Length: 103
Image (cartoon, rainbow, N blue to C red):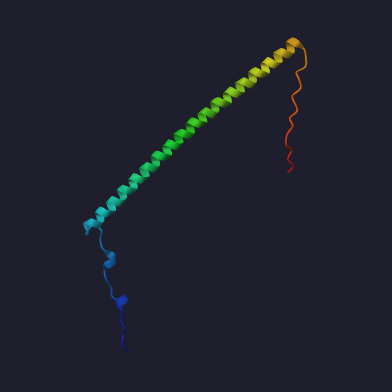
């Protein structure tokens, strides 16, 4: 019985080339790493800019909220003072009319 050998049976070292032995492969790897580093740096800058924008908006929200709470407190104090001075009942709140939706 004869042994049949094909191209797949031939052992080679073609898949085991050392990157350092071929300097162009090492340089190509370095180039790829530098490009990835540059891309990641841009991503980081973009993310930091977005965080700064979000932080600024959160500060604006807190300032607006504090102003509204302060205005409500002043309005409530003025209303209480008007009741104490005049002794009259406050005007009833207007009845809102509009579209009524049923769920």
